[in-house]
Amino acid sequence: MEKALELRNVSVVRDGRYILRSVDLDICKGENVAVIGPNGSGKTTLIKLLRGDIHPYYDEDNPALMRIFGRERWNLFELRSRMGVVSMDLQSQFRPDTRVSEVICSGFFNSLDVFRNHTVTQEMVEAVYEAALMMGIEDLLDRPIENLSLGEMRRALIARAMVTKPDLLVLDEPMTGLDIVMKSKFRSMFDILIERGVCIVMITHELTDIPASVKRIVMVRDGAIFADGDKAELLNDSTVSELYGESIKVECQDGIYRMHLAGDVIQ
Image (cartoon, rainbow, N blue to C red; front, side):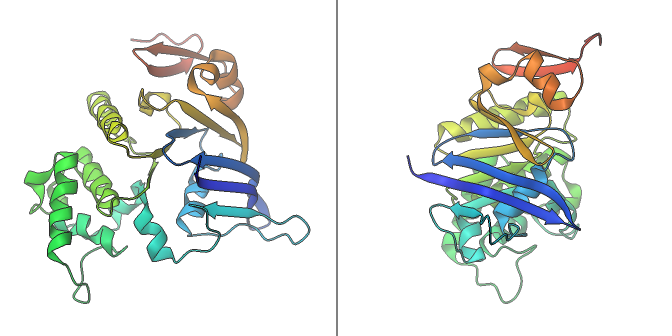
């Protein structure tokens, strides 16, 4: 199968310390993957690497290879039209009076608003409405984001990433801060996107965030790939406990996994 992402011996070094070390990872087009691991394991650094915000560590004796959609070199504007990234730090970077329609439309320009130098075509206007409709926020297009709930803002950011109809949607901790009801709605929404052919890579540290239709798990610990395989095989007490360095119990109900510290009473 054609590969959406291909990493070989990729490392990231900051202040003399390895944040990622010798990562090998393939994700094929059409594949849906959850990348999980403890806080500080390197998951967010992986996102920044894929977005082009940072670059792999250069070692002439042991060179790295990083291909996205089969190419090693990319124009960042072109890349970000094919790979939509939803990072939760984005929501604090927009002005509070920015309208939802402007947030979504800014995805065409890889910006934090729609500015005077941007030419918005009729096709873009229609695509903004289509993306909002897909996320169920078409009635919020004229609303300033300061008047949105957390769940509504997350939907707006996902619509922003989807407005260019990317080949790959990368979600960085998309359910952080959401309550149990909203998390369930988001999981169902991601399942629907996957059914429609959207390829999703989700970064999370919570098993409950993983939609039932995501079958592959990549585990990251201490900046390296700890395990990579089928969800049903990896999400068990032993492997998850080793990943997080604690005694953890894993439970599954209706395709949704949950974990808790061994001995904790679940309400």
